[in-house]
Every structure is written in C-alpha cells, then in structure tokens.
Length: 98
Image 1 (cartoon, rainbow, N blue to C red):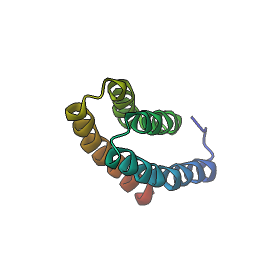
Image 2 (cartoon, one colour):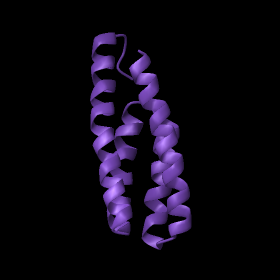
Image 3 (tube, rainbow, N blue to C red):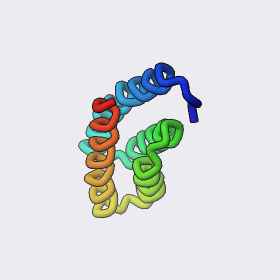
Image 4 (cartoon, rainbow, N blue to C red):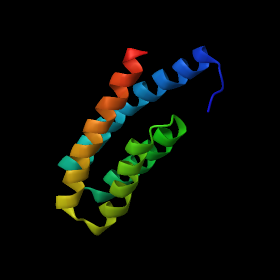
C-alpha cells in the first residue's frame, strides 16, 4: 500500500501500534460500563486504521464487533473481545519484529 518506502511504512505501522493500544483502554472502559455505543465506536475506529495498514483479520473482527454491539449481545461481544485482543497482539508483535 505504501510502495517501497520502508521508512514511511515502518513509521505508519509504529503510529498504528501507538494509537491502537489506547483504543484497548477505551474498550476496557466501555466494557466495564457496559456501554455498547462505546464498544461500537471503538471497533469502528480500530477497523478503519487496521484496514489502512493491511491488518485485515483484525479489521474483520472489529467489523463484527461493530455490528453486534448495538444488539447488546454480550456473549458475542465478549467472544469478539477475546479475538480482538489476540489478533491485535499478533499485529503488535509483527510490527515490533520489524
């Protein structure tokens, strides 16, 4: 997506990592308060940035979370939360290994 500019690519990936970690804090707060609107908003933001950096599996999880949150299906929300954390962890590990 960013051509062959390795420095730019690494900079964008680092920015993604740095912005994604606070999103998890937002997710934690929304879950603790059982605010599905907060869960949905967080999932939307993380979905967009995940797609931008090519983290499609993470974006797909966020999309599913964004869709299920308004239905207040807490069982599914919590299942997706576990998946989101695992996939985000894998993406962060990949970025850190570069």
